[in-house]
Amino acid sequence: MATEKVFPMTEAGKEKLEQELEYLKTVKRKEVVERIKIARSFGDLSENSEYDSAKEEQAFVEGRITTIENMIRNAKIIEDDGSNSDTVTLGKSVTFVELPDGDEETYTIVGSAEADPFEGKISNDSPIAKSLLGKKVDEEVTVQTPGGEMRVRITSVK
Image (cartoon, rainbow, N blue to C red; front, side):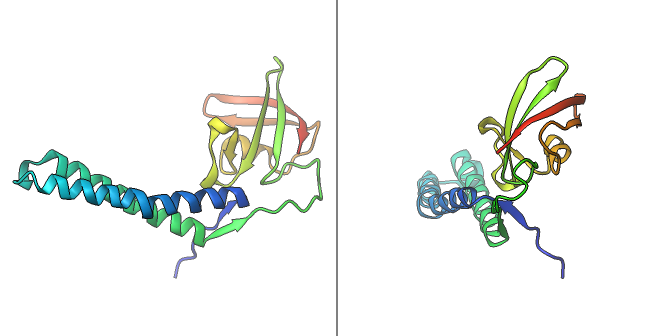
């Protein structure tokens, strides 16, 4: 039997997934079923785009429910034990400066399940996070990105 993938995440990330799951099961699922009922009332299903659209949405919602349930079931909560406070680890925020021009960026490294680059949360599987994990404050690191190499110096870890 294949081993299940473990999803590292913060407690807040797990709670956010649980809230999304609850919404999908209690609200969204009912909305989609209602759309299907209405579309069925239009008659011939063979040329009923509303029905097709509702069935596609139902498949998406059910797939997302299954995915979230799997992620929650296989969640591994990231706990900050306070040690290695200047070392980049999963769950910590890292600030670095791009060399040589000095653009400063801050990201929190989280599991892929709760990654959201627009909120400054990057996946531990991303090229930037992979390069930074295990490094310490004031270290210079070469990061492989899709756009090429980037040199950075870590300025803080929280």
